[in-house]
Length: 115
Length: 112
Image 1 (cartoon, rainbow over the protein chains, first blue to last red):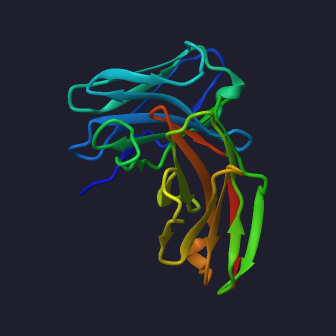
Image 2: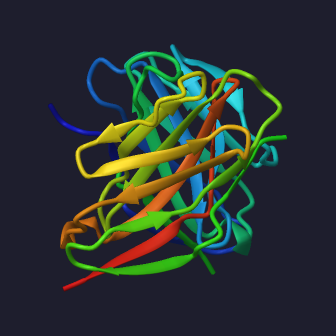
């Protein structure tokens, strides 16, 4: 079974631009969560989507948004990029909504660099 | 607010030796779960071990075990018989309210 895939793997943008990242979950998984990983902050939760609905949201500004499609694939959008948005963006999928008994499987991440 | 603290940014251990990674957390919730995740260099993050907070018995998965001290809100990971493949970033995570909270990670290097 194929794992979680994320595209693109690497991205370079300039301040003020916007970017869209994509995540394809494991087949049969209906939940997709997004995280921002930076050296100083570790992983910070962005949001979780389940059955095309945002179920939970972390403490990030409105420039960060996402959506989920009927095939469970998810996209994350960041508008008006800032230097501080440079990070590794990870997505994780699970069969059902995030809970203690639904293991999350992580993708390889998209490395975003904002110049 | 929930917080997870990993106070050791970097650690190293000789191959075949034992190492312990520290993690403390804070939550006011009674129902929560704790996890250790491993992120090898340039590879995907994987689950190492999980602990239900309501269970007093420490979780064990082969060479990996935890020391869960609920009153002290401490959740350390012990790796026995360290192998070169254990070289990775290790993240401690708290799950409560259907949301994960991660620490900043400990970079572990296993030295041959």
